[in-house]
Every structure is written in structure tokens, then in C-alpha cells.
Figure 1: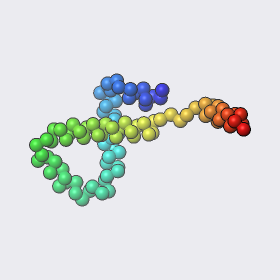
Figure 2: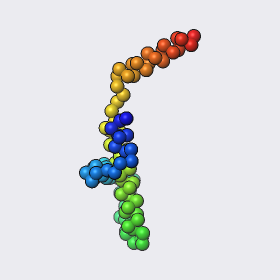
Figure 3: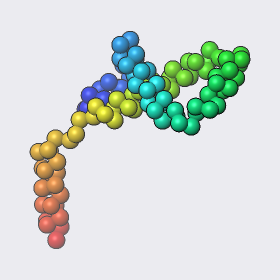
Figure 4: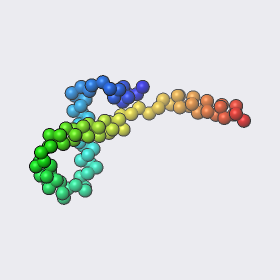
Length: 101
């Protein structure tokens, strides 16, 4: 089981890990949307602040940012497969292919 899978197997996250995930998610969101959202961001923000369900939107945004952060960290911290294990799988596949012929 990879470290990322162990981290997300249903256990509660620590406050530090959640903060890192939120920060990574926010950074990823900013990077992906900064070019297209620069012009209309202020109007959208004002519209969101006037809504009666603003607290629910904030909670959903927090969950979205946490999910984005998890994806970003998993993308950049995932361990590559073990080299010898990969070689062994290739050898077994070759052996199975020659046995079938």
C-alpha cells in the first residue's frame, strides 16, 4: 500500500495535514484559474457574499480545496514503482508468453 493510499484509507486527517492539503489545493486552483478569472472575479465574489447559503458554500469550497490539495500532493509525492519489481513482472509476462506458444 502506498503512502498516499495509507493516508486516505478513511482515517481522520490531522490539523497540520489538512492545512497543507488546503494550501496545496488553493495554490493549484489559483494557478489553473488566474488567467481566465482575473476580469470577473470581483463581481463573482460580491455575488457570492450576498447569498444566504454562504456558509455552506464556504464549507463546500473547503472540501473542494482539500480534494484538490490531496490530488496535487499525490501527483507530486507518489513513489515510482520499484525497479526490480517491474523487471520481475516483465520477465513473468515474457515467460508466460513463451509458455503459451
